[in-house]
Each structure stands twice: as structure tokens, then as C-alpha cells.
Image 1 (cartoon, rainbow, N blue to C red):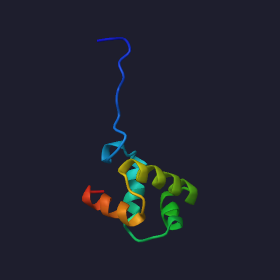
Image 2: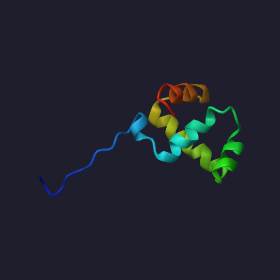
Image 3: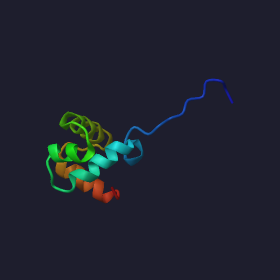
Image 4: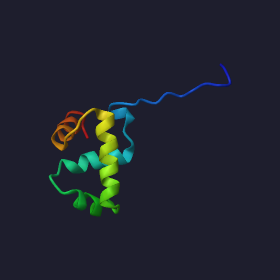
Amino acid sequence: MTSQQTIQTPTTGVNALTQRERVVLGEIGDNITLEEIAARLWVTRNTVKTQLRSAYRKIGVSTRAEAVAWARAHGI
């Protein structure tokens, strides 16, 4: 073992998502607005947008429909 070990974390896919990103992805499948998601989660609409943008990047999608399909296929 060396003193400079690095822990690699995945940068794509379900393991790369934070818990909050998973929650937000689960919410978009309910066909509700970003404002409604924000109200459910006690955050601002911009926070939801930021979390979704990050999740989209990590899972390799660019639309809400793609994200919903991806989330369902991965059990979110």
C-alpha cells in the first residue's frame, strides 16, 4: 500500500448518482412540474434543475423522456 491511494468513484451510470439525484429522477416520472418537485422536496426550482442537469450528464441523456425511461430501466 502506498500513502497516496486514490479512491475512484464512478462518473457515469447509477453508481455515479447522488442520493438526491436519484430522488429527483424518481420524481420526474410522476409527470409533475419542476415547481411541484421542488415543493415536495423543500428546495427551490433551480436546485431541482441543477440536480437534474447533473444526473442527465451522469446517465448520458438529454431529455426528460430519456431520463424517465433510463430511471425505470434501472429501478429508480
